[in-house]
Length: 196
Image 1: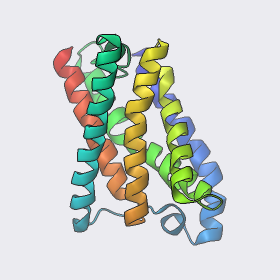
Image 2: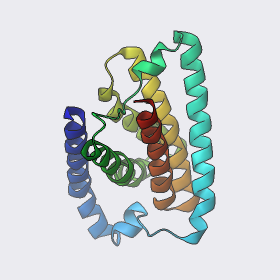
Image 3: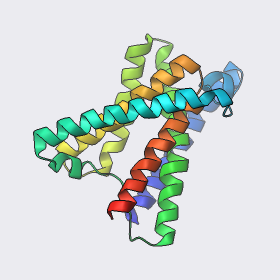
Image 4: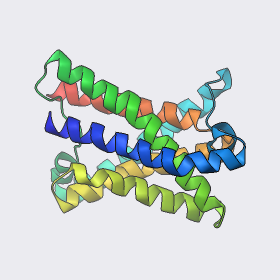
C-alpha cells in the first residue's frame, strides 16, 4: 500500500505543478482547451484510440522482446511497476482509480498538454516529443529497483509517450491520448491482477 500512497502523492504533486504553471498560460492563451488541447471525447476518437493502443502495445512488445533476449527475462520482471497489492477489494479499487483514471489524465495534461506544447514553441515536433517523452519515462523509473528494470520500464513507457505525442500532433487534442493511456494502464493492471 506504500507504493500506492506514494503514487497518489506524486500524481497530486504533478497535478498541482501542472495547474500552477498551466493556469497563467491558459489565462493568456484562451483557456485550457486552447492551450493544452483539453476537450471532451468525440465519436471520431475511436480510430486514434485503437491505432494508438495498437502502436503502444506493438512498441511494448518490441521492448519486452529485446529485454527478454538481453537479460533472459530478468529485466521484464524487474521492470514491473504495478502489483496486485494484498488482493483486497480496497487495494484493487485504489490501484484502478490511481493507475487507470488519475494517472492517465494528470500525466497526459502535464507531459503532452503542458510540456510538449511548451517545447513545441521553441522546437520542431520530434525534438519536442523526444524531450517530453524522456521526462515522462524518467517520471516512472522511481517505481523499480534495478538499473536494467528502470531502463526497460523507461523504454516501455517511452513508447506510450511517443505514441501519445503523435496523437496530439494529428488530432490537436489530448483526449485520444488519455484514452490510450487509460487502456494501456488498464491492461497492465489486469495482467498484474491475473498474475498475483
